[in-house]
Figure: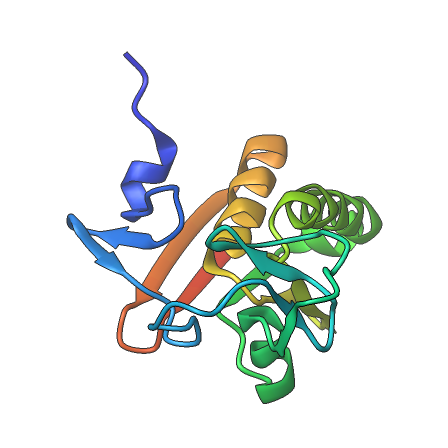
Amino acid sequence: MKSDPSSSTGFRSGQNYQLMGEVVRDPLQEREKMVEPVVCKNCQAVFRKGRWQWLTPPNNAHQGQCPACKRIQQKMPAGYVTIEGTFALEHRDELLQLIHHLENHEKAEHPLKRIMGIEQRDDGLLVTTTDIHLAHGIGEALSHAYKGELESNFNEADYLLRVHWRR
């Protein structure tokens, strides 16, 4: 039986990051129930039925700001994906295509999963994300498509996931 590759990093899929059975919540998400519907004043995502969605904003919607736009405004990524190695340098455009494809796919269903920035470095790329799950997904996609070495480290206190992929 094949083991789940995500289990080796302590990562569990879902709304919140689960670490050793504990649910860890994003500190930028509202703790109290918001009066619905809410439309994000920046990206126009709508909070309805307990989650952020891409919908046409209703006329009665309250103004607010989604957690992704808060992270972008505060320049506070939830995920860092470091991509290194000669393969990364030689296949930069191909890797970027994969990363953008994954972001577009994820963001279409989950408005809070966005890339904040992609920085070219001497030894590869640094991708910052608004969501730990997107950062994890990028690392998994790279590992699945191109093999290589994948490491993930989650800092619960800062709600920050660092993913490192190298080939």
